[in-house]
Image (cartoon, rainbow, N blue to C red):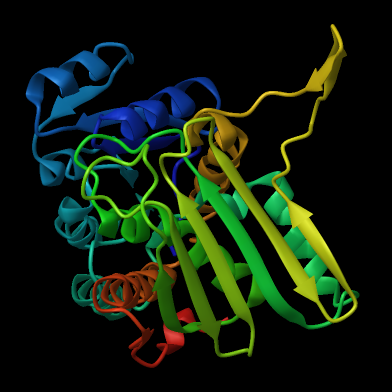
Length: 341
């Protein structure tokens, strides 16, 4: 694999909230990289972001940015439907990519990306499942790998948001939120998810009309574990992500958010994060730094295109389970040799 320059020139595709935050992160937090190009269908927004970075050019066409001599790698932070075209263009230029989730919005397009990467004969994509870089989740993963708690039997997850953004649908609770628990399940347990069941109570009075919120999602895995996810995107009070693994000889829980507890004026308490960027700021920093470091070594690490495809397939089963009721099996192709551990 080709060794990249000492300072990595990065093109950021998509300059909305996530993309703009990655531009800031690379310029202010990450070492060994700089933003040399930004891309957005909104030309004025791209120009505005580029103007804040010395030597950065603005584009509306991802392929044009990737062809620039000072672009060595790409971050894809555009909306999911635009990911496939951007990834295939990156493959044509042999550029390593950090692609925000989803890899693509559905399993069929994710499979096309998977097949295109296999034709290259090497990995080019790291998918942005940032929880794998969160300090608490990393500790939980390390503990499970020691085997001291025995075999994982169950995994309980809670995922709560203050309020859903405008335009959200019941299906987006699965595709845009529970997608993280799908990846966390596969990563923590080392299992593939084989079936999904979705149950939903009478919607909360805080949920916008037509949205089935909260939902209770159950995964079955090929390792014999049962996983549940409470997804509640209009809880009203804060952003919470918690996980507890129940094993044969003990349990372990992360996400209680009690880094600091105050006692004052006859009360005790702490602070609840209000969104994912606040809660996972350190994880995003670690994720991007790990991607830059690996790319400069000529390597691609982290969640792979296979992980992105597998989650897309689970999402499709989850949406079917929500719409049709009952248990829906996950349909996965055989795992290609390129993505074997």
